[in-house]
Every structure is written in C-alpha cells, then in structure tokens.
Image (cartoon, rainbow, N blue to C red; front, top):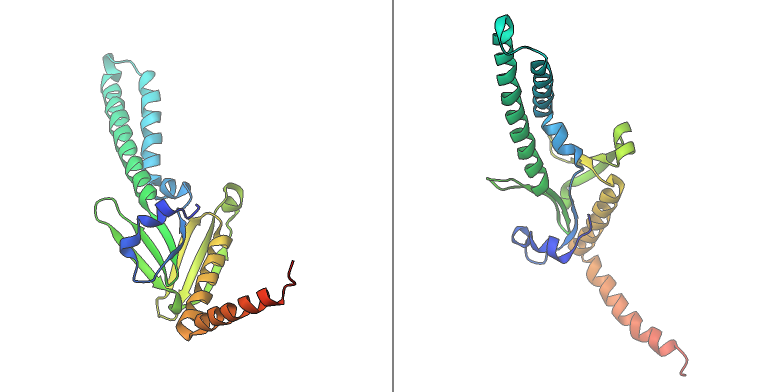
Amino acid sequence: MSTSADETSKYESLLATGERVLLVRQRHWLTFLEAGRWFVLALVIGLVSGALDAGVPNSGVASPLSTLLHYAFWIALIVGVIGLVWYFLVWRVERYLVTTRRVIEAGGLINKYTHDTSLQALTDMNVGHPWLGRIVGYGEIDLLTAAEAGTTKIRFLPDADGFKKALLDAKQEHELEVGGGKAVQEAVAAVSAPSADRGQPAE
C-alpha cells in the first residue's frame, strides 16, 4: 500500500513531535478468512443443510428432520455471515505503520488500540515466505527485541521484504538522528553543495 498524504494524516494523533510515517501497510485479505475460519465452516454447514433440506419431504415421517435442517440452514447462514462481516471490517481498519521511531499496529472497530515497538529496541528481523504466501502474494515477519518475550510476528503481510527494507532504512535514520550523525550529514551536504556549484564551469 502506498503511503499517501491522506493515509498518513489519519494517524497524526499517534505520532510524537517530529515523528513521520514512512510506510502504511494493510495485511492480505486472507487475514480475515483465516481469523473467521469457524464462521466459514458455519456457512458451509448452512449450505449443506439447505441442500439436504431440499431433498427431504416437508410432511410425513421426515417432517421433523426437514424442520431441523431448515433451522440449521438459517442459523448457520446468519452466524456465518455476521462473523465474516465482523472480521472483514476488523481487517479493513487494521494497519501496520513504520515511522521514523516505531513500528505501530493500529486497529479496532469499537475500542481502538495501538501496539508499538521502538526501532531502538529491535535487534533482528526474520522474514518467511509460506508456500501459500508465495502463490497469492504475502509473507510474514518476526520482529525480535531484547525483551524476554520480545518477538512480534506479523502474518499475511504483502511484500514482507519491502516492509523489512523500510524498517531497516527507518532504523538507520533513527540511529543517525539519535547519535547526531544526521546533523553531521546535513552539515556536510550543505557545505558540499556551494563547493560543487563553484566547481562547475561558467556557461
């Protein structure tokens, strides 16, 4: 997902002074199907019940079975649809942000939440590519920190390699900023620019 001005402006309230959003990423659409797999099963049960009910007489000895299949169809269908719609909406609002200081997970329909990991605390990143992910276009990344339980796994992440690259670039920029290297680089660039202009021959 490209990081447009409209997209980043939604998360300005989450940012500290001087912090910038470098990347906004939404997880793959398989996320909500995996999270709502039991509701997918409920839909399948409902469809099977409806198909069986169509072949069972509504009267006679089979009447109780027909009634049971009829109720099973509607209950499973309603539960399955409501569950899948809920997880779809949860997926729609969830985002992973890479900023100049943190990795932020933001989401929530009713109760909003944010989970963040400081770039300074990151010690390593492992990227995996499951066989299904290679087919439909997603990967997963483990964010490792120095804390005892410091592993955060992000699954169903489109272009996981690109996400890792953005994290590495952000971490390097953050380290330069904290260590003063960024100010030195900017000062060197400012001094070099006039020198380069004077070195060019006049037309």
